[in-house]
Picture (spheres, rainbow, N blue to C red):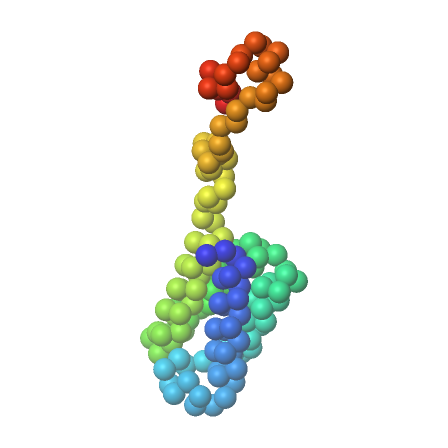
Amino acid sequence: MTPRSLALVFGIVYLGLGALGLMPGALGGLFPVNPPLAVVHLAMGAWGIATYTGRAHGLFFARSAAFIFAGLALAGMLRGVEHGPIVWVHLASAGLAGFVAWRPRTGERRSLAGDRRRRRRRALVSVERRHALDDRRTLVRG
Protein backbone atom coordinates (compact mmCIF):
# COMPACT_ATOMS: atom_id res chain seq x y z
CA MET A 1 0.00 0.00 0.00
CA THR A 2 1.32 3.41 -0.93
CA PRO A 3 0.84 6.62 1.07
CA ARG A 4 -1.46 7.88 -1.67
CA SER A 5 -3.78 4.85 -1.47
CA LEU A 6 -3.69 5.03 2.34
CA ALA A 7 -4.84 8.66 2.06
CA LEU A 8 -7.77 7.60 -0.12
CA VAL A 9 -8.86 4.85 2.28
CA PHE A 10 -8.51 7.09 5.34
CA GLY A 11 -10.26 9.92 3.51
CA ILE A 12 -13.32 7.85 2.67
CA VAL A 13 -13.51 6.07 6.04
CA TYR A 14 -13.00 9.13 8.22
CA LEU A 15 -15.21 11.44 6.18
CA GLY A 16 -17.99 8.89 6.60
CA LEU A 17 -17.23 8.33 10.27
CA GLY A 18 -17.13 12.07 10.90
CA ALA A 19 -20.41 12.69 9.08
CA LEU A 20 -22.11 9.87 10.97
CA GLY A 21 -20.63 11.12 14.24
CA LEU A 22 -22.35 14.48 13.81
CA MET A 23 -25.78 12.80 13.48
CA PRO A 24 -27.20 11.76 16.86
CA GLY A 25 -27.69 8.01 17.10
CA ALA A 26 -26.41 7.33 13.58
CA LEU A 27 -23.70 4.95 14.75
CA GLY A 28 -26.14 3.06 16.95
CA GLY A 29 -24.01 3.34 20.07
CA LEU A 30 -21.32 1.13 18.56
CA PHE A 31 -18.81 3.98 18.37
CA PRO A 32 -19.39 6.61 21.04
CA VAL A 33 -18.23 9.85 19.43
CA ASN A 34 -18.73 13.44 20.44
CA PRO A 35 -18.91 16.49 18.14
CA PRO A 36 -15.24 17.55 18.61
CA LEU A 37 -14.06 14.03 17.72
CA ALA A 38 -16.39 14.01 14.71
CA VAL A 39 -14.84 17.29 13.54
CA VAL A 40 -11.35 15.77 13.89
CA HIS A 41 -12.53 12.78 11.83
CA LEU A 42 -13.95 15.11 9.17
CA ALA A 43 -10.69 17.07 9.06
CA MET A 44 -8.58 13.91 8.72
CA GLY A 45 -10.90 12.62 6.01
CA ALA A 46 -10.72 15.89 4.08
CA TRP A 47 -6.93 15.92 4.43
CA GLY A 48 -6.80 12.34 3.15
CA ILE A 49 -8.87 13.18 0.07
CA ALA A 50 -6.74 16.29 -0.55
CA THR A 51 -3.61 14.13 -0.32
CA TYR A 52 -5.03 11.60 -2.75
CA THR A 53 -5.81 14.33 -5.30
CA GLY A 54 -2.24 15.61 -5.07
CA ARG A 55 -2.74 18.77 -3.01
CA ALA A 56 -0.62 17.44 -0.12
CA HIS A 57 2.37 15.13 0.17
CA GLY A 58 1.46 11.49 0.83
CA LEU A 59 4.36 10.53 3.07
CA PHE A 60 3.80 13.58 5.28
CA PHE A 61 0.13 12.64 5.56
CA ALA A 62 0.93 9.05 6.53
CA ARG A 63 3.48 10.05 9.19
CA SER A 64 1.24 12.75 10.63
CA ALA A 65 -1.78 10.42 10.64
CA ALA A 66 0.21 7.84 12.61
CA PHE A 67 0.94 10.36 15.36
CA ILE A 68 -2.53 11.94 15.34
CA PHE A 69 -4.37 8.62 15.56
CA ALA A 70 -1.97 7.34 18.24
CA GLY A 71 -2.72 10.50 20.23
CA LEU A 72 -6.46 10.03 19.76
CA ALA A 73 -6.16 6.42 20.92
CA LEU A 74 -4.19 7.47 23.99
CA ALA A 75 -6.76 10.16 24.79
CA GLY A 76 -9.55 7.60 24.39
CA MET A 77 -7.78 5.20 26.76
CA LEU A 78 -7.44 7.90 29.37
CA ARG A 79 -11.14 8.81 29.15
CA GLY A 80 -12.42 5.40 30.12
CA VAL A 81 -13.73 2.03 29.08
CA GLU A 82 -16.88 3.31 27.30
CA HIS A 83 -14.73 4.53 24.39
CA GLY A 84 -13.29 1.06 23.69
CA PRO A 85 -14.27 0.41 20.06
CA ILE A 86 -13.20 3.80 18.72
CA VAL A 87 -9.88 3.43 20.56
CA TRP A 88 -9.26 0.20 18.64
CA VAL A 89 -10.14 1.93 15.37
CA HIS A 90 -7.66 4.71 16.16
CA LEU A 91 -4.95 2.21 17.17
CA ALA A 92 -5.43 0.22 13.97
CA SER A 93 -5.32 3.41 11.91
CA ALA A 94 -2.15 4.55 13.68
CA GLY A 95 -0.51 1.17 13.12
CA LEU A 96 -1.41 1.05 9.43
CA ALA A 97 -0.30 4.63 8.85
CA GLY A 98 2.97 3.99 10.69
CA PHE A 99 3.67 0.88 8.65
CA VAL A 100 3.02 2.68 5.36
CA ALA A 101 5.02 5.72 6.43
CA TRP A 102 8.16 3.97 7.70
CA ARG A 103 8.37 0.69 5.79
CA PRO A 104 11.44 0.02 3.68
CA ARG A 105 10.94 0.88 0.03
CA THR A 106 11.41 -1.94 -2.47
CA GLY A 107 13.19 0.35 -4.93
CA GLU A 108 16.03 0.87 -2.47
CA ARG A 109 16.74 -2.85 -2.17
CA ARG A 110 16.58 -3.40 -5.92
CA SER A 111 19.03 -0.60 -6.64
CA LEU A 112 21.57 -2.05 -4.19
CA ALA A 113 21.52 -5.50 -5.77
CA GLY A 114 21.42 -4.23 -9.32
CA ASP A 115 18.77 -4.82 -11.88
CA ARG A 116 18.83 -8.52 -12.76
CA ARG A 117 16.20 -8.11 -15.43
CA ARG A 118 18.62 -6.35 -17.74
CA ARG A 119 19.40 -8.41 -20.81
CA ARG A 120 22.89 -9.04 -22.01
CA ARG A 121 23.73 -7.11 -25.13
CA ARG A 122 25.55 -8.45 -28.10
CA ALA A 123 28.37 -6.54 -29.70
CA LEU A 124 27.72 -4.46 -32.77
CA VAL A 125 28.82 -5.77 -36.14
CA SER A 126 31.31 -2.90 -36.56
CA VAL A 127 33.01 -3.85 -33.27
CA GLU A 128 33.17 -7.47 -34.35
CA ARG A 129 34.78 -6.63 -37.68
CA ARG A 130 37.27 -4.25 -36.10
CA HIS A 131 38.44 -7.02 -33.77
CA ALA A 132 38.45 -9.53 -36.61
CA LEU A 133 35.68 -11.64 -35.17
CA ASP A 134 33.67 -13.30 -37.86
CA ASP A 135 31.16 -15.07 -35.68
CA ARG A 136 28.87 -13.22 -33.24
CA ARG A 137 28.67 -16.21 -30.93
CA THR A 138 32.31 -15.86 -29.94
CA LEU A 139 31.94 -12.35 -28.48
CA VAL A 140 29.72 -11.83 -25.45
CA ARG A 141 29.72 -8.48 -23.66
CA GLY A 142 27.98 -7.71 -20.40
